[in-house]
Image 1 (cartoon, helix red, strand yellow):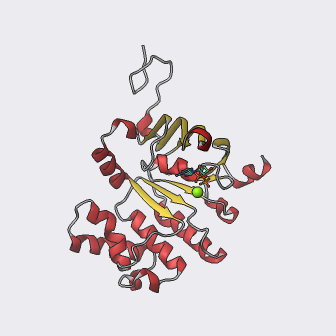
Image 2 (tube, rainbow, N blue to C red):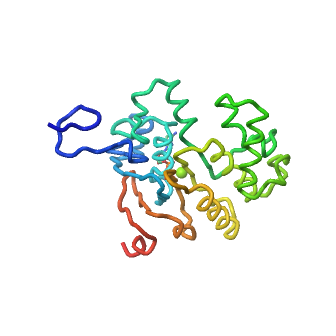
Image 3 (cartoon, rainbow, N blue to C red):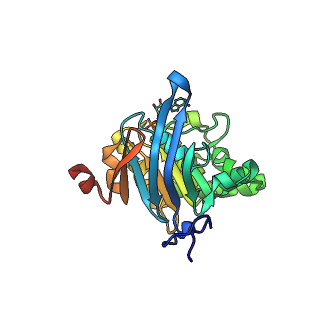
Length: 252
Ligand code: ADP
Ligand code: MG
């Protein structure tokens, strides 16, 4: 008799969860209670594969940020399963979860979220310092990564002295510096003008996408859909369609 990898129930299909970057099944999430309850996610099932760039699109309030926060292990779902490279956050103790997240995930946010009192290189070094790397080594690696995003000459600049596009490139370098297997980006281009947003997306496409590493990018920005391998459309806490290309999405 075959069983699932989790060994709970017999079934006729074995899924190798570790070969799926993100496996979501039946995820629900509500905020608040009573009259104030918000059903943010109403049964999300989605698989994202290693090496894939998946975009999540949908109207404001449909649950995109909630979903990627669950994928990134910074928010717990109410029900359903979320496995990242076969690892189930729910089966980890808090300290293990923090370590796993620190090793495996990189984040890019709309608002960059750089620490204003730290230089670009120091900001990029943060994920390495958190993981216990010595400062000198961490700064050296951060400088290398800044070089990869075309900002070697701004390593000593404070965020306030950088343009929006440059700050987002620093944030991308910070998301990459520890070589994570999954990068989640929440509206990474929406604070940027068209040309800068496109360049930032090109950079993410070139630098971040590599064999085995997956990207999940939440966006409203139709101009960057062409960078996706697949696009999942969400509405009202559900996935309402997954398409392989922007052309297919617009035809739906
Ligand atoms: P999106 O990113 O697609 O705009 P969100 O995931 O942020 O959507 O939000 C989904 C729904 O959950 C929205 O109705 C939002 O108002 C609600 N929501 C999000 N975060 C909270 C929270 N911390 N407390 C209460 N409601 C929330
Ligand atoms: Mg959001």
